[in-house]
Amino acid sequence: MGHVWRSSFNPDAWKPALAAAGVIPVPAKGQEHAFAREHGMHALRHFYASVLLDAGESVKALAEYLGHSDPGLTLRVYAHLMPTSQERTRKAVASVYHPSRRPGTAR
Image (tube, rainbow, N blue to C red; front, side, top):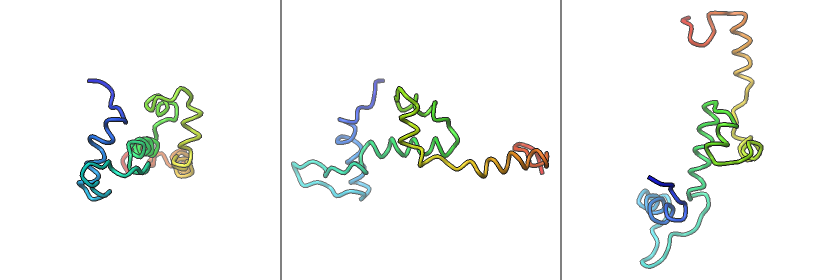
């Protein structure tokens, strides 16, 4: 199995699936699907990245998964999607004072 190439995946699989689902219009016979970056493979890539960040995946790991050579690039592109650490911080401090609130312990 090889790579999935955007240049063939978008017109051959992704766009027809979006049209079949009613997300984008079906093109006229002999015409290509209308171009819209927000409906292309790039949107799927951003969705993938946002799901991983929301689940707590590290920027370094995400950079590797996305093929970025520099995690700094990944951070600049996706920083706005990273969940806030405030709730995680509150839970960590609370677990010090209330051991029963530590993740994985019964209440």
